[in-house]
Image (cartoon, rainbow, N blue to C red; front, side, top):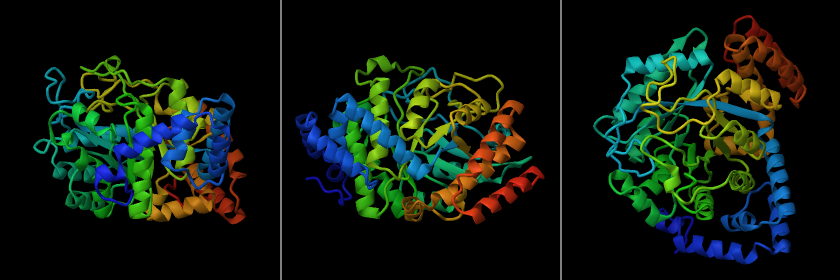
Length: 471
């Protein structure tokens, strides 16, 4: 039985409901009158149901797809402007007790080098990330109660926040670790984390259990219900995601939106972010073994429709994707990208990119400076802002700010000020030149004169050595 308000995974992610949704979408994919009606509803910026969005995903009419893409681009501009938030992953440990068949960290992989960072090694990694210019991290770790207990994660977060090097500081730590208990989520909240991120991998229960044959992650319901426990533990911001390429993408798309609807129905606030990783080649893993991969075109359509269906939610694309793919989908609704990423344990402190402990191939291997310059040349503002999290604008408070459109009066100037910090402290001369011109131009897009003047004064103060201004 399908019930978005239920706390049971099998009821808020109902297999029967997804199958009926896909059948409905197939039956109406060429019903242009219905497609138009759904697009008109989407223009109200209130989102779409999983069933409505699934009809748009099934529709193959090229004119209608163009309309969807244009609308996604406009909605992105309305709620997020032209800002793109920058972050980097930090891998703490690749010890893992699970047997996930698509991940090289699986416990049966005997030839991958196992590594766990000491607090001293974490310090070196963080300084290396700060020297690149990063202010926001997402920490990653395999699931291993002996090697990576919650105490290790908490100590690591404390270490990361404590390091001040030159003008560097990590101002927000997001956490991507295995599903855990309400008590442990409370501890993460107390440690001052930003978003708790957990990828579902696949919402198809049978496939999920086959892909996770052994280890605690095998428990589909415990994993799928993790966000409810996180919110019960006081974490306001949670991040969803599926690994496209494991199960049929239309099934995943419907399940992902149903999960967002469930969080909204139960907790009054949907996901803070949705990530869209695709299965990539890695040690001991060949994505060609999975026959559910999706084309770049289908991937772009999924991203556009996530933006239309959940307009207020941040969308993340990592360096798993190439520069050309990222270029296309940023326009369609992506609001966060990683830059200069290394997916190996202890990768940042080394001059050469190590490959022996990588979780997956990094397609976009450019430096952070290259990524910042590239974004600016496309007309985007690379933002290192963490103000909402630090000012307590999280969960429903962030969403109400976003929905009211007031985000332009705080997020836009915050993005410009954090970009200015980056330009002063870390940018190459060429990037600095592009950035200074962009800031002058973008100041004109701050609606309130008073806010604009404060921003101008703060930008001057940053030039003389002051840091960390925020609205």
